[in-house]
Image (cartoon, rainbow, N blue to C red):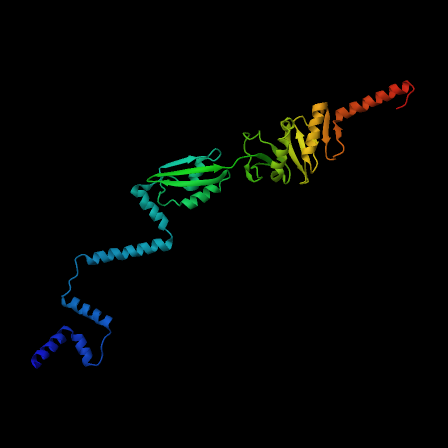
Length: 310
């Protein structure tokens, strides 16, 4: 009985010699350390064999980890992803653009950096949409990925309502008064012209009043804002109509009646002043004023000859 126990103790001492010695000396290693020591002893004694090519695989893994760390720290991740996915067949080769009447497709491609080597997987839809919305004519934009190699861009453009002249600059404006872009060509020449400070924000209101009088509106060449309060209207024949600050509709009704009854706007006049509600003032052109003075003088002479006084 004792012999059997003695052999077992010897055997365990042989198998776990380190633990036995440590116990004999009064010191016991922590459990995690015992496992490490056992592994090292087994590795050195040949009881554990290392698979072939373990060193090569470890070296490759080490260099891969170092390269990945460098890519992340250096901020080259997106470029690497784009290069890999482009090589895998996800390069953008087809761009479908719709809704762009005034926006150039070249501007869209350059803004999105779609040069034939851009990866569809690496394209940021939110960033692309925000960039397109910053273009002058674009009100809203939608960008969609169509796998594996296409991008669809749908634009909604702003509508030009009029031309605003501020100083020497001419700009296209929306109905709300927001500036779209500088005027660069003559294809918008048919739009109404609004001149002066705050004219762009008040344009829709005054143009709406004139829409009720199409016969007068058709002759308007420019709406000129005066002191940010009222309008002077320049007609195509050079006549200036001075409108009041309020009750523009009443003034236009009077002007329309005078023109229909007396052909006022066809006469040799320079301006029609409608600013006062109880009277209408007519300013003659210099030539008409000279002719009128000459006619008055001739009449005075005729009356004098007849022995009459004016």
